[in-house]
Amino acid sequence: MKLSIVATPIGNLGDVSRRAIETLQSADIIFCEDTRVAQKLLSAYGIKKNLESVHQHTTPFALKRLFEKATKTAKNIAFVSDAGTPGISDPGGILVQEALKYFGSDITIEPIPGPSAVTAALSVCGFQADRYRFLGFIPHKKGRETFFKNLAQIDETVVFYESTHRIVKTMDSLCKVLGNRRLMVARELTKMHETLYRGNACEVSESLKSGIIKGEFVIVIAPKKYEE
Image (tube, rainbow, N blue to C red; front, top):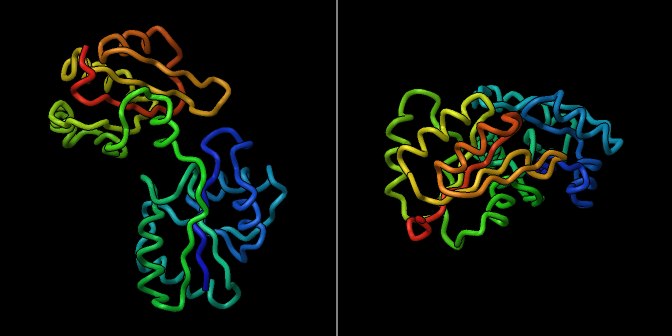
């Protein structure tokens, strides 16, 4: 059995690699976070495949059942997340872990690299990024206050995601905690309305409030030495 972990565009369909398309075309079955999202992606490239959903609530037992089903008809499985490189704030890591447990030495797992919101944001942030810390999504409620307090103590470039619904509240918190610490907020990376906000935490907070607060956000905080 072969499991291919396939990176897909984070917004611009032109960013897909030829190898990714070829891998999806040759797959016997495709595991994905959301079948509706995956279907739109595959349709854009003229690919028709059987889809199976693997999301954050999929249990190890459910994955075992999927593997059992797949072994009856498939030799090549591909996995795609909703966007970007799987294994980063999505079920990709658990899928690989459970596949190794189930198949053991009878499976080959290969990465099909490509777009990533993390590396895309780092490439344009303007901060030193030879060492950085990725924190995924900010806690919704429990642990949120502690999260922000800890940010001020990290002396590396920090990257994390935030949603449309919480970005304003998050930026207000960053203004209080970080003050003059420089950062960049990337909105809708690679999409038509891509916007990059730069400045210290308080400046960017105000800029966001005067703009369009819709879409997906990546926040990159500079190391302490970039304080203004």
